[in-house]
Length: 336
Image 1 (tube, rainbow, N blue to C red):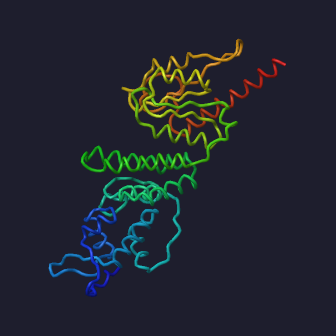
Image 2 (cartoon, helix red, strand yellow; image 1 turned 90 degrees about the vertical axis):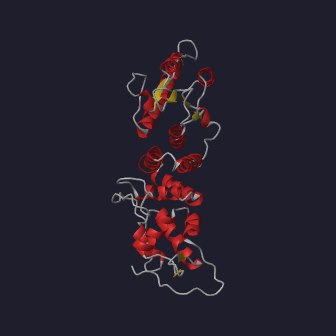
C-alpha cells in the first residue's frame, strides 16, 4: 500500500500529535506509528522536525481501521478498507492463522495463538477500552455461536490472554482484564430472557462460589447456559458463607448444587459433603441434591461429580434434571 500523500494543512485546520491520536483510539503511540510504517495509513503532514501531525481525515481513517479490526478483520486488510480501496468483506467465523505479538497486531502484545477471528476482535476492543465495540462483539458472538461455543472458543481464550499478560507484566493490563470481565458479565446477563414465574419454580439448580472464592464468571456463564435451555437456576455468586449456602439449599430443595472453587485453597470438601447429606421431601420420597464440584480448585480430590468444562457441566445438569423428572413421574404413578 502506498503511504498517504503528505500535503500541507489548510490554515486553522485542527491537527493532532501521535500521542493525542493514541489516547483517542485507546492504543499505544508505538502502535499508531507501526500502522503508518507497515500499512501506510499515516499522518497527512509532518512538522519541520519530522513529527507526525494527524488531521481529522487521518483520524477518521484510523477510527475506521480500529472498528474493522475489532470485528476480526486482519490489520493489513483493515488498513486497505479504511482508505476506501476495497468494499468490506464478510467476517468469516473460522480459525485464523496465529497472530504475532508485534505492536498493532492481534492482541497488542498478547500471544493468542490460533484463535477465532471473533476472539481477536474481542481482545482488540478490550485493549482499546472500547465499551461500545466490546458489548456489540460479545452480544453478537453469544447470539451467533451460542453460549457454550462463545465461552469456550472466544471469551475464555480472551480472558486467559489478558490474565497471562497481567501476570507477566504486573504494572500493565490489569485494567484490561477488569474491563473485559465486567463487560462479559453484562453480556451474560443479557444473553437470554428470564424464565416465566411458573417455569422458574421447577427442578432448580443452585450455583454458588465456595465461602472464600470470589471468581464468579464461570458460574455466571453456566447460569446463563442453563437459562438458555429453560432450566431454572438460583445464582448466589461470590463467597457465600457456608451456613447461608446450607440454608439456601434447605429453602429451595435444588436438584443440583454447583460449588465453584478457583484454587485448592478455596475448595471446601467438608462443605460439599454437608450439602450432599441434606435431605428433604415427604417420608418415603426424600431426596438429596447432586453436588457438582466445579473449577480447578477441586483438581486432585475425589469430591463428588467433577465436570470438565462448561459443556460437560451443562450436560450433567440436564441429565440430573431429566432423572429427577422421571423419578417424580414414577412416584406419581405408584401413588395412584
